Image (cartoon, rainbow, N blue to C red):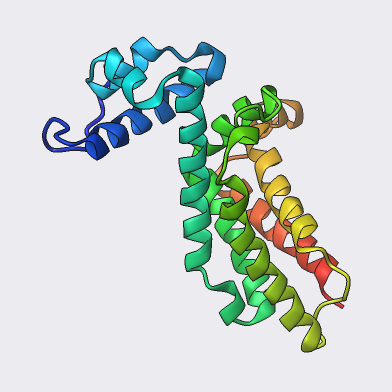
Length: 213
């Protein structure tokens, strides 16, 4: 098991220690799920004393919640940088789908973390004080994109931005989270470079086919 190498020196501040622990915990939870993850292994990955983990986070469940909140915070921050409401609405939809697909491909740990939390029926996220406020700006931005598209006579009316985002996320998520079984069932590598390009093109056509007049 490799130790975290995010810092050039040993953690010197509380913020440093927390950051190293969260990174180690993310790797451990993504690899083994919530039930299989061990605090001893997180401490080993972080190169820190186990007691320090409990000092900062109280319990494994609290640590898992903060890992989840950080994961959501990172993807939401990346989505905001897209400035979708500042560009052509059709291009904005294309860009959101492409971004979501690429983000999931580049961050498989995000999918693993969500799988674990769904298995526990969102027990941890229900205790979060921040998760809804993290998501609100994205929905507002997507709502602005849809309104602009309607005003330009490009999009049909009555599209719920929450439902649309769930659809975009789900068609990306399902394909990747079930890649092993799907590849086996259909007898082809669904993560080959060609297959990934085909999948992205299909998803864009599918969503645009719904929103366009």
